[in-house]
Length: 549
Picture (cartoon, rainbow, N blue to C red):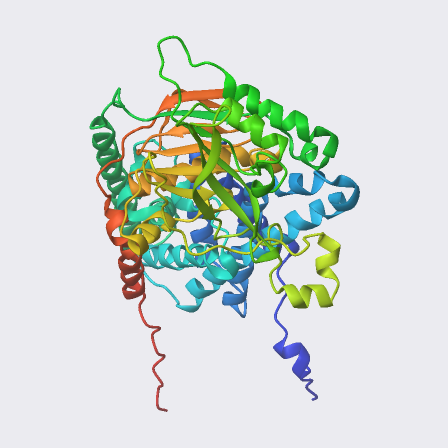
């Protein structure tokens, strides 16, 4: 009688799962990421937050010989889908010069989304590698993804666009928790509460009961934060009648027109005409006029040179004692090839033929946009030809770390130029460095790059969280929208905003600053505490017991 033995290869081979079993979790991860993205403003589909519960469930069920690898893939797919929706408007910037850069638009969106998705992939990997057990794994899940989001906001200059903690509309009751926790700490709360239904899965009675308790606890946390926010908003006071008066000028200048020399005079005249408009009947003239970042496509020093015709035009539309806050670029006096993206405070002074202009304050942008305002790894990019390919040029030089400025006769302000409004903590850092707390935040931005997309509305919501965190009003000026006056609770003041593509002015009084918030005092300390709780919730892996035979 003879017997046959299977070959080692046949004996060790595992049956390959059907294609649907391999692809269904991956497609589910993509769907979960999309759901989380559409929960963000301006879409506001808040049930999409349940996408976080789906991501938790998918990570818990990562299978195969190497479940940690499967967890990384699922996290990365969810993140890539999330950032594809959140940042698709990046393509618009390449279409401004479509002839030279239009071909890069889809490539840029894909690379950016997939690159940022790596942070979520790493979070999924870390979560699975720690082998979480029991309902406390919800806290670990919130911790690893909160850390991933914090790293996304800091690594390689950072890009904290659409943090989970900024999902709620700025100015709403739930958004007020940012005054306590900041956007990063609030992200931990959003992650933990939104993912809690992911614990409701098949299992023993004990496990099902623990999952139900977690969902109830999550609901109680959200109810508590809502009550806190509602009480905070109920205590809001009206703007004093004697508050400083403002005029925001939105000239609706498309980005492409700034590269046409023939349009230069027309652009200047658009800003001048709006600035010259009389105030409404019975209203006081504006003490402070704001023009956006890059309002005039020329050097600040050039168009404020007394020999330039632009000097006379600007001086002619400002009243004596009136201050113009304007964004633009300038070159360093001792190094003409070094350029800064800057904000100037310019005052019309009495005297002479109609008075003159004097620069009474200046701020140089510190946090620059990678691949837009500067080239990361500049020398290497030039050596391999990438710098020439994307037409960045030499770019801008970052200014010193942010500090408030106090032009004479103007309430102290913290400038945040465009991209800088994404970053929690800039204003409190400037306050700590200078010893001076500003009375307001001036956010000059060039959202014309975003076109008629969701980008300007997302940027408005994100920037408004900086007002909530610091307890300071914010004044936003953009060339094409959305410009707005935002109070210290993150709320757009009624009737004091101009949407995309609108031409006009906003006349308003500056809302009051609040007492320093908890976040203003302690920064990201709440996030650190919550992450420590997450770490402590992770059980060490159980060791297998060896049996002696």
